[in-house]
Length: 206
Image (cartoon, rainbow, N blue to C red; front, side, top):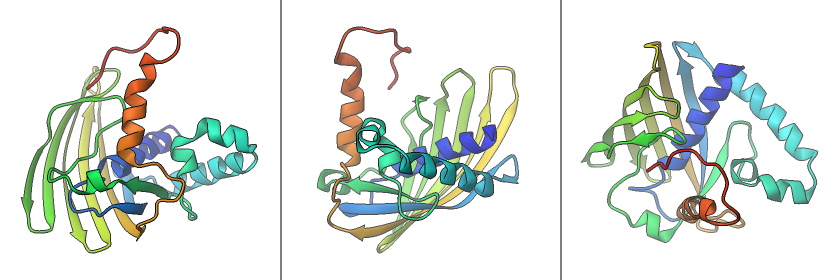
């Protein structure tokens, strides 16, 4: 299940980061179409892990659900789907955002836009060291956005892991309901270490 968890994290990062450039404001739902790690299809294991997580969330009290929040609270109705809110400010940006691993230190991505397609390249230093490089493409077609990404991660010992993903986003409507915009969540996450008593923390990240 370790690879499934890794793939799920990668998928979550992909869905959260691709929200810009061509997307209109409102509520979107992401769905994985393909996820392979070293050539192995990870969707069955990811679906199983997601169903187990949904069962756990269903047993939580309303107070517990509020505490965990985040991705758990933004899950779609179907397995492996997540919902995200795009603010008007995010929708108006010209420069698209591209996927990045959680906690990774990434260089400014390179991208090239042609019509409704945006090709991008990323280079990151993941948490724990090593390197991660990738190339991908995002295609916008009305209320549907498809993002493909092929990436390679090399750890400090030189071991390599290749991941290939395809994710589709569908616009559900202008009303986000209880879902908070992604840029608001990002600002809250950035401000979180400054609140409360000092505590040990990892090295600062971009």
